[in-house]
Image 1 (cartoon, rainbow, N blue to C red):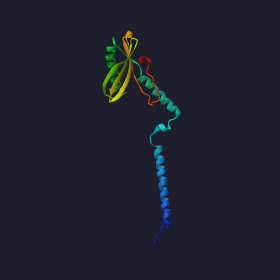
Image 2 (cartoon, rainbow, N blue to C red):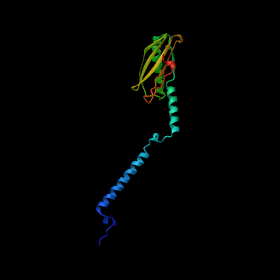
Image 3 (cartoon, rainbow, N blue to C red):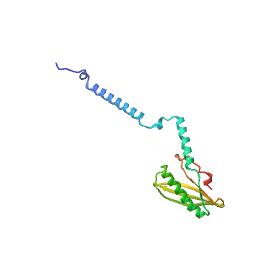
Image 4 (spheres, helix red, strand yellow):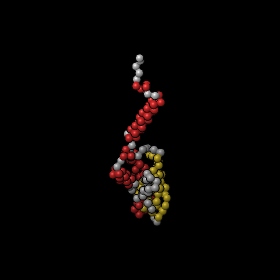
Amino acid sequence: MPFESQWSRIPLTVRWAVCLIIGAVLIVLLVAFVSHNNGNGEATLSKTKLKQEYAQDTILMHQEQAPHSVRAGSPAAAQTALVAGVGGLLRRQVTANVLPGPVQHVRCWESARQGSRVGFHCSAKADDINYPFLAVYTPSAHHAVFCKKVYAPVASENVPVSKRCRL
């Protein structure tokens, strides 16, 4: 009498059902394991940690939009000085690995006038990314002030630019 296992005495349909159930359980366990260990730490951050990160992001955004000034004697000289100032700022940020580089071009143009003050828009391009700037030239002070315009990660939020850079 040949050796016969207990498994072979179970009807074939029951054996198939047991194999399918074991396979389904293994798939569910694998999905649960991968979902838990996917490296997405954002899903498990505490509210305190999220508030802290938001505060740090806000600080960085304000630092990035900080006003910078250049000396100029006329609106035409202000436009040239703004191109040089914005370009210099971007080159420093590229050198410090704050932005990807290289700086490709910078251009500024007059956008508005309010009394003797002149408003400018500037556009700088580095590594095929455009960076907008706002600026104001004040003749009595012989200087122009420029700020980088930073857009909020959420379109519904507004990130105001310093009053010194707006008319």
